[in-house]
Length: 290
Image (cartoon, rainbow, N blue to C red; front, side):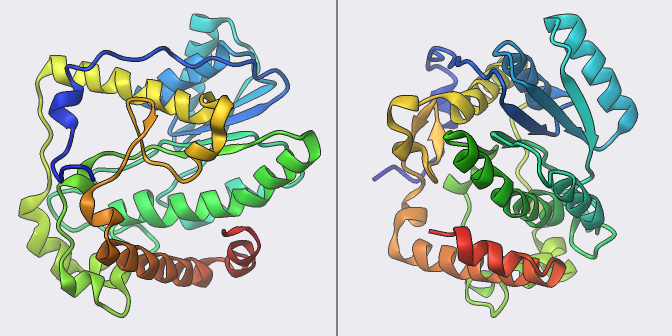
């Protein structure tokens, strides 16, 4: 079992492994949150593997177009497309997923995320903004696109992938019983009382330039590996938490009995909330969950 502490500091002194590269000819790749940072770096690497279509999913049309132009300038790849999606708006997420009807989809990298603010701010759909972007909207998008991914795999005999860019903060978090034992954990997490009471404990990352630079490079190379690497044993990657391009054991709590019970409860609660948003969710979960 892993020690409960995050491996973050240790990882800063660990050498990066080789960058995974495969032939993506004819395949469609989507990177959500692609106009800057980790997302844009991921698009550059995918472009080098010659995908049939590379979709940069961005919230801002202006910044998205600039990213497409920059990608072409830096890589000479000319089949990138900008598709708009705003995870802060549920209607935008559903419209983005519906646009894929009949389309091929081989790789989905869910990279967009939002750090919690010091106060309590809600998205237009009523959820606290970081919960909506990081949990509700990202999960909704992945589930709505799952039928397209499965259909692509069946049609072309391939193994499509969903990659959700996350972090190792779960090693440091202690989930309170008032959340885990609540009838609806998401509603507790979404309450202004809970968010305001816990706002002073929002994690503040290191601001050392060397650490940030190393971490960013490592993070986007891990995104590439999760999307295209490990072809010799893909079973090890299914549902895996990856660190340093390797399937890694999560925190003791996550793999313990209490953690498993909480995961199951949170999943049921998430599906219930998403089912209120889109009536296709129950059938998708029933058909494709393992």
